[in-house]
Image 1: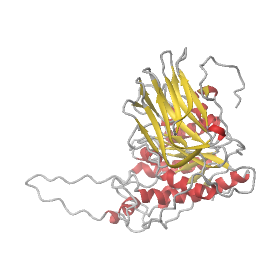
Image 2: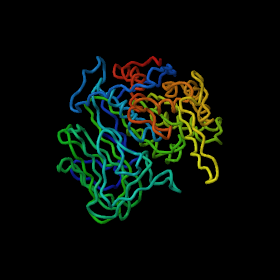
Image 3: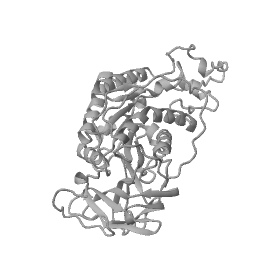
Image 4: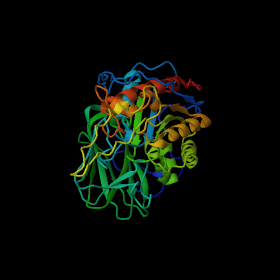
Length: 455
């Protein structure tokens, strides 16, 4: 790996690791030859998954590689950034599993650090933290300084605190990258895989700032069941991100989600940090999956929203000009009716009509749907077409009318009771459909094609 420049006065990390200033870290997957972004396309409108959830695919062997397509590449990296639908890793987990079963498993990609929020999870591994860590959120912070792409930081000043990643089956990896903060009084951390030391590094530096620590796997490729980041001394340590990568092929599908957020969250991350992180991750495909929270904002200005979303697209393209962009439109969602609470001397509440009958059959209207949700969908569809971005219409996968209520009433239920999020089965339906939609992009990149059909 070459940084193309001089040293920057940071302490060297032991154990064969690299300690890199975040602004200069450029970690490109081997053989990365991303072609330009494709022309835009709109997904078809399938409505054949209304009430039946397909069987879950068989669990994959992470160490096995699928037969590669004939061409110039063996693997690629996909990064999905979105709201709570992404953060829960149920939807992305279904996409990941479908693609990895067809083309082989890559590294775990971007993972949460500890347990920063109940809605931020991983379906690939168990991510855990000892009790001594405290978390900060970009969404709640008064200043965005110190936050990275994950939107969270985990901090401690105690020795022996741990952040761990545990896999049910051995997780192959080529290297691990940890995003942290340097400082005058900062402490040190160690990284070990199944009790094998990989890295020991001090975060002390003359100036505070972001830094990336990279630890190589023994022999260039190894596997672990448990990876542990451990604080060494009773001094401040802040970690904001973790990435586990595999350079020998397969599909890496990373997920970064912010519960309750809109696409504007990406505008809060310091621009240099966002650009540098995306350049380091070097995804072949970036999936943007926002819209639900925007749709519940009754005061939303669609024109201003379009401009903000377009600004995010420009930033991502500046950071990764050769990556393909894909936009996921918001799924249908509804406001749950407020429960009736009659006064003691009032008559009982009237019987509510069945949820699936609140809109006539075949109708696209739904009284319980937030009025701006449809506008958000249309803004995104038009913006994607204007920007030449493939657009997947999650909304159209669901039944017409009050699709959320109908999926809630399905057997098994595909929608959660809040009519915003999905059940595991519902996310699996959506994830498998999106995997089918995005597969032509994946197949073309693996072949080295420069043109991709967009449905």
